Length: 67
Image (cartoon, rainbow, N blue to C red; front, side, top):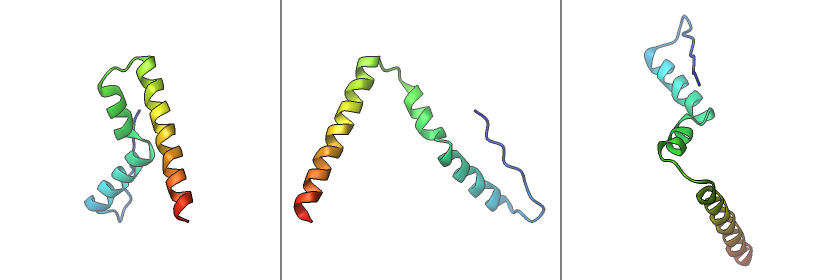
């Protein structure tokens, strides 16, 4: 995965850095790095997805009771 930022004639160093940061967030570079940092078995990934779904369901239940 390569991120290429082209410098325009009026771009300052700060604007180039901001463009790079924005592009890396949009391309999920940091999240992908964190995901690849440690090996997770398929069952661990499924378990995390299941926990995430349950967390969202419980959050929605709490919010629906309030409003």
